Structures are given as C-alpha cells and as structure tokens.
Amino acid sequence: MVKENNNTNELIVDALDGVGLIDYERLVKEFGIEPMSEFYPNLPEELQDYFMTRGIMFGHTDIGKVFEAIKEKKPFAIMTGIKTTGKYHVGSLSTCHEVIYFQKQGGFVYFCLADLEAFATNQIPLTKQTEIAIDNIADILALGLDPEKAYIYRQSTEPIVQRVGLLASSTVTMNKLRSTYGEKSHLGYYNSALVQVADILLPQIMGGPMPTVTPIGADQAPHSRLTREIARKPAFADYNFVDPSFTFHIMMQGIDGSDKMAKRNPMSVFTFDEPMKDIKKKINNALTGGRDTAAEQKEKGADPSNCRVYDLLSFMFEESDKALLERNRACKSGEILCGHCKKYLLENIEAYRANHLEKKENLIELAEKIVKDISKPLN
Ligand code: SF4
Image (cartoon, rainbow, N blue to C red; front, side, top):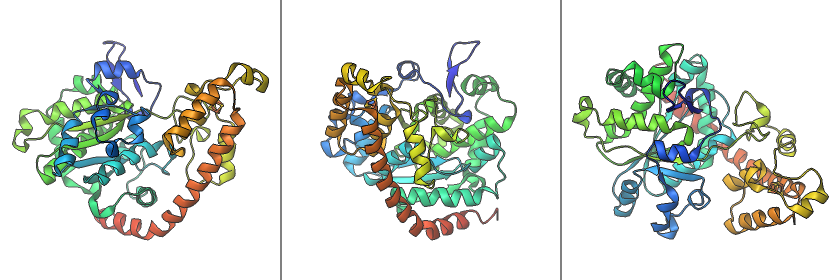
C-alpha cells in the first residue's frame, strides 16, 4: 500500500505488503504522473481503450514515446510480471488487460515470474512455485497473451536481472530504499525490489534502447520513480536507457468492502477456478452503494461510485460504455435496485469464467512446457 512516511510525510510504497486506499490526486502531484484524460483524446479512436475512456488507466509517465513507436511501427517493449504466490485472481486482470492491449499494438512482452520476490516476501520455496507458475501462465495465455511475442522468465533463473539488481543496489543508499519502501525487517525485501528495477530494464538490456511501458497499479508509483532514477545513474550510462514509461491504473478494492483485494481475505476477491456457487456468495455479499430499503432506493437513488458491483462491471464485465453509463444513470435515479445489478454481473461472470476455463484447460500443456523449460536450473 502507499502510505505516509511518519518522519518525512513523503508517500512511500509498501507494494510488497499489498494495496490500500490511495489518494490518487496526491499521487499524480507527487510522482509527476500525467493524467491519461489529457493524453488519450489525441489518440486515433481505434487506440482508445476502454481502460482510458473509463478512467481506470488514470495516469502515465512518458507514454507518448510508446505511442510514437506504435505510430511509426518501431520496436517497443512491455514489461510485466506476477508474484507466484497463488492463484491468478480477478484483481490481477487490470494489468493483464493493459499488457495484451499493448502487445496487440505491436509491442514485445517481457513477462517475469517474480519468484525471488515471492520468496523474499512470502517465504515460498522456489521449487514449490513451479506449479503456481504453470497455473498463472495458463491463465495469462487464456486471457490472450501471445507467447510467440513474449519472453517469459523466472527471476531465479534469469542471471541478467540478478546481476543488474545487484549493480543497482550499489547506486542507491539505504536511506533512499527506506524512504521509498519503508522500514523492512530484512534485506530480502530491498533486494527483491531492486531485482524488480532490473526486470523493468531487462527489455533494453536484451534488446537495446527502446521505449518500454510497464503497466502498474497506483500503489507502485514510488517504485516507478526509483526505477527511472536508477536508469539515469552514470553507472548505467553504457546502456543508453530510454527512460522507462509507465501507465497507472486504479486498484480494485475488496468485493466485501475491504480496502483491497487480498488472497488472505477470500471474501474480498475471487478466482475463475472457484466454484460458481462461491463466487455467487461473494457477489451477493458485495458492498454496494445501495440504500437500506428498496423503497428508499427507489425514492432517493443509490451511489455507483461506492459500489463494488459497479466497479467489477466497469473494470471487465461490461463491454459497452453506453450500457455502463445507462446503469450509472439508472442507479442514481433509483430506477434499478442492487439485486438487478448483481444478477446481471453474475451472468456476465459466469459466461466469462466458462469461456476462460475452457481456454485455460487447452493451454495447461503449453504453460507446463514454458515454465518447465525456464525452470531447468531449479528443478
Ligand atoms: S443499483 Fe447497481 S450500481 Fe447502483 S449501487 Fe446498487 S449495485 Fe451498485
């Protein structure tokens, strides 16, 4: 989560512990994030993704150079990854959506299985992460990642990120690390953060200087700033790094009304592998902006801006902007009740889930091959 450093009042990232409530305006101001709302209207309509038009991808740093590369059909990279701690869940879909969007525009994806980070922060033995990684990769392939246009690797078996992470560690002070990530109990937290810096620089180390976009949640803003600072250090001058670009998306909050989707709070999140009856239970218990009684809601209307059902529709389960806007209007005017929205959302989740699981089943073998090949030094 992003929180204030008690001593300096600066915002620091606690990305390694999860996500909390975020002051987006302050993030934009303090981290030099530029509003996406001022950028995307200048893009050709076919490039205006709904994450932009709905304000989910709310900001960016230096994204212009990536779109310049798209326009001129020049090489650019997309950097992303997943911490291999468990099942791929609905809260991870935002990043994947953006990665696939940029891949479809011609970018080459570098996909990191962040197993060193999972070891450092969750103490999961590396060999135990292999099965998790296979499952995660099968999900990502089912969501549409094209493996032919991607370099998928594990941090623990990719020597470049380990080496560059180590080199990066000598270019930052402990004070800088503490002010960025907060006080940590062991060096593994800081080391894994520096390996993640190296992950973001990897496309340019392997492919030469080029625009690179890393889609991240708002909670990662301090990490993005540190990465850009390290990329400019004289020690790395030989690489001629193009400043890495970032897009920032809003973090989905817990379905149950908690401030984050967390695997350790199962009512806050769901995976597509869960039985539909469990997902139904979660959606039926979701926080909504509805009133105490149906009569009151019909009279006064409800609040979609504080409603997890509306959030889920907006993030991924309502394709039509027009239908979403209409729901927003009907909610505020009291013309619809929350039960109506939950039913509609569940129908959409059920269809999406069935389609996803069918694709995933057919991709497990490929995922196994990919992960076993890159895990060889480990297993
Ligand atoms: S009517 Fe729908 S959008 Fe409005 S608060 Fe209820 S569930 Fe949310």
